Image (cartoon, rainbow, N blue to C red):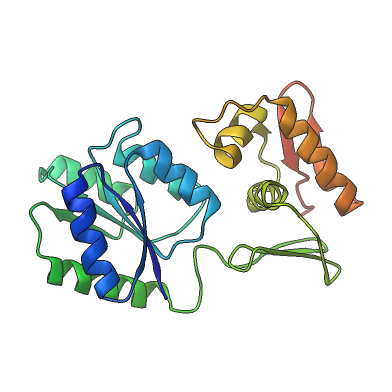
Length: 223
């Protein structure tokens, strides 16, 4: 069953979308603001996002930009903003479609069906990440080292996935907290150090480098 994240702050539209999508055979999860949407995106796999533009906390453009930094997950914008500039801004963020309100539910369902078919029925979000002796599968949430499964916590898996997706890129502790623990989290930065320490212990290899005074990165592979 395909899983769709509905990001919409108007309860009536939330209910309408949920009812139609579930009747059409989709699993749905709802977020009422941009912060909640990003938190859900970081912790659950989805096949598509229906994204309103005018959202509290972080607007739809900001949410889409952050999603695109990590994933090619299909995004359909639903918005009352029908101006050319807004549409161009959306497509500039590599969205899959821009649907203005009011919209036809049958037409929207058909657009979703076509986008999901085009994006491929066999995979969600990303393919496996391969780094040296490691294979990380975001869909099954499995990590293999030398072909053997690693016993990782949810946070450790997300840290590993994020670092390996961009070898050589430095992530500050604040960035890791916001992406892994959530934007409204009050967790202290030192909890990142603790999770990195545990992850290194399980890897038994120096694949995660400390950038003194800044944060962490996956060691860049030799070209």
